[in-house]
Image (cartoon, rainbow, N blue to C red; front, top):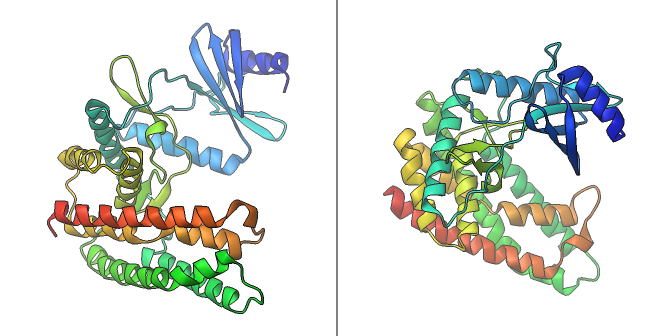
Length: 326
């Protein structure tokens, strides 16, 4: 779409006068007579409609600091241009929170807790595969990879390195499956059910505005899971961003639990997620089993970096085990 056509479509459907714009990959920043707006391009109507309705339900449940879609003058949440769908949101001006800033981390922790409280109010009718089953897929993949390398005629140093470590990774996954299976039985016996979760929480998805209010600016299609999944992924993210320092992790948990105290099973969910070797499994799967093998993107150096990363995860596990007093 040319800028002139874009200008006409937006003026026609949103009654906005564009003074100037900046073009980014897949989006436009618009300076209009009604403030700065952001135009995003979507290719799939089904996911776009789901994202819109979930945003609206989330706002209705009380969580409003999110980039909601602005409706057109006819009440539609998007406009269609050929095969593309375009949505407009307000431009959330602000800074990315910093892991070293305690006030930033406290604001984001509260925001994530409030997000989970809002998401819990949205009714869900969807199947869910327990973690123990998901982990079992990973176990089967590692067995396939091991067999594939063993039967390989000429092995290189990378193959030998994987064979050296893969048995310990298989054992770790087996332990994760046992942990997940035990937690699932206790968790669901108490009446807890999965709900919508963000799925990929990251500090860069937040903006803290001039009034120190944190906004969530990246909310695509959430995942259906245990909310502790979000917490676990975000703890790993914080631990990495803080160069493996524990204090930001504990600070997040202290603030989060002011709003949502974690029960024993939820703490065990978090530990179970952290101990599962996700990165190693995905790395090996992409190299050996994916339809389009990515061997040139998966080298020996990366593999050993992921082994070191898993060791950091194990240290985080031990620290959290003590913190949770389990």
